[in-house]
Length: 247
Image 1 (cartoon, rainbow, N blue to C red):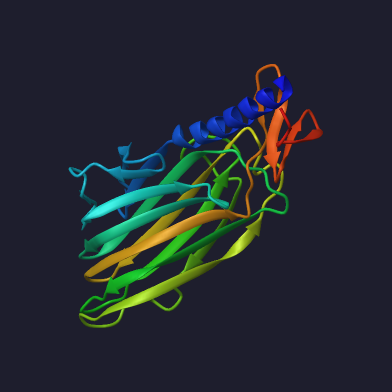
Image 2 (image 1 turned 30 degrees about the vertical axis):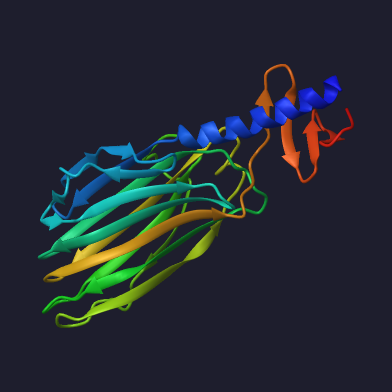
């Protein structure tokens, strides 16, 4: 009976620690204009995994926007989503880099992927392009130098000539990750998106960097050694013990 109670408490603590790790993660947004000027935007939590910029920060480098937000997700995969709404400019280039830390997954045969989609109201002249990268850092340091990256570029600009709004979908390749790229001590994912506006445009979209097929790593509990839950079993120190026990 005591063993059953201890395992039940341990499983609850394990789940709690995993949830606490996600909730304690942080994000950072950096903007860079074509002139080379840069600015770090404050990002505050709106829920346990969603972050948004302050409403007073809606313009930089000749661009304005309605909202910028970042969402971290650990459901089935480790992913970071940068969402842009109502981004407009009269010409030039704007680079937005979102960075999120607190990922502690180490899946086998992991790959880094990137994608993007949204809508764009085209310019009256010139062309718009959208390029992006998904990057991963083997540390929990925000905006750190990446160990691996993969990207996409709108080879055929998603903009139409004239004031015509159209949807677009951008898909990048995948990059295989090694054990030195991700580890159980934690890593950060960056999503870097570059908007190049020829004349004028209004852009909305979401850009996602992800490590698909991830699974939570074992959590070390004080005095108990590694503990994780797999199916109907509890793993304690490498031993499999059924969670449901008669008491």
